[in-house]
Amino acid sequence: MRLLVAYDVATSYSDSKLEYRIVDDDSSIARIFATSERAWFGEIVDAEPGPPVCEPGYALVIDHGERGRPEERPRAAQKTIIELYEPHTLLELAKQRRGAAVHAIRILQRKPASECAWPEEARVLRAETLAHPDDDSPRLVFADAIAGKRGSLVIVQCDLARSGLTPAESRARRRAQRDLLARQGVPWSRLAGLAKRCMFRRGFVEAIELDAQALTFDHARVFDAAPHVNVISTSLRGLHDLRTVGMRAEWWSRLRGLAIGTLPTVVDFEGMFANLRAFEMSDVGPQHARALIQSGGLHDLEVLFLPSNELGGNAIGELARTSPNLRVLDVSQGRAGRAVPATIPIPESVRELYTTAGATIPRAIEKLALYGLLRARDVDGLAALRSLDLLGAVVRHELAEISLPSLRELRLYNTTAEIVLAAAKKFGGQLELLDLRGIDGLDAMHDELRECVAGDVWFGKPDLRSPLMVASYLPDEPMWDTGLVELSG
Image (cartoon, rainbow, N blue to C red; front, side, top):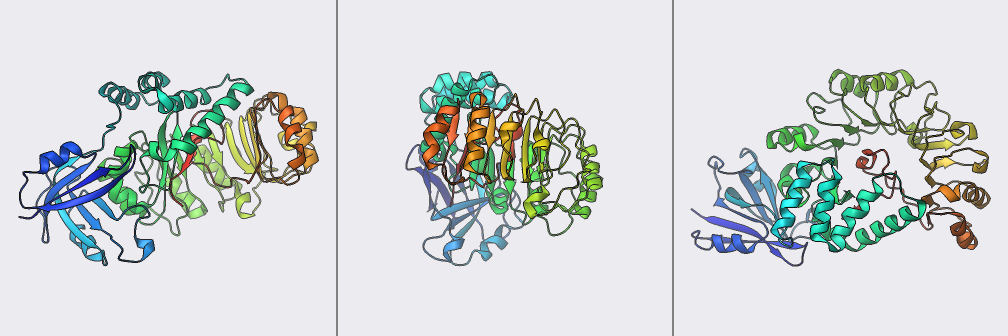
């Protein structure tokens, strides 16, 4: 029997590289496990492997070296490990990995990652944050225990997720959040090489974007690194296999939000929504809508994103009626250049809406993103509106003519310097954030605009990335600027 041990060698607090060693006996395994952050030990197999003895039960240890096409090699790793729960694809996948040294093993022992930089008390307190995910108190106790910049992030984000801050207080915390994550977001996430981007919420990574293969085969490492994750955005390739593996591996049950992009054909959605509270899918057509409704799982959804959909008002209305608990609805067909039917019945429960200008908007709306030509009457008098996102809108009227007494966040883009200045003078004293990124002709007005606005003012290039939908979970949480960290590219 040939044995192999794969183990992470720490190169910094958050970074590590994978090494592996083929051994004749297990005499040195205990020492390697004791000194490694993560480790896998198992027997190398080249025929049908035996039954699993732990979870996950099988793995491929891949030495990429410098062989193979660059796009097939991980950006930041020469060796990787793909974990499997079933043996039937183990040898098949090993044969497919041409141009790399691949060892298929049946795992006999596995050591998950641990926060070795934290004392035992902090690890116990972090477990409390997992046991009570909606409660800020364990998070703040944890922050006090670890102190430093990592603890500061928890405190700052918990403050931002609650209402009641003055514009000046919000400005200070937003700036602190951006500075902390710009400097330490990647190492604190512990997801470099595993995910494309992530979102810290209330101090911990709760949303990630990664490809389906990484989620299917390397989910154990993902959840070891970020155990608070409950929202995933992933590619649509192999959705059926993704769901099947997820349910078998029991990570599917921990998801509360899922974004899957565009599906070229209708799929069976049965069983997908049992635990989900948020769902996103682009370019939804009538056939997809029928399949979603027939699944019977939309009743508990609170967040439904259908950007660039191909649905009429009746289909969207039926989807909305199927989800009576909706708080967030995205029907922004304007992203694809199409008009949204003005007859869409928006449920009164919706408090955050992404839609095209001209659609009927509930008067109690709290967050609003509009696409297309803005008309003053679309938003005038929305007394509860806290966030207004006009990144995709064309603004030709002076916003100074509009009454929005609760407005705290305003994002402008397709408009003029004169309209920007008028809006700043009108709302500046109540704004926590005025986002002017991407608007030309403001260079000479920076100081004047900052004097008008009590909170933060942003200049520079526009950020066109769509947010991960975890930002919508709390009604008072910022609509954008919510702790997003790029991990690749």
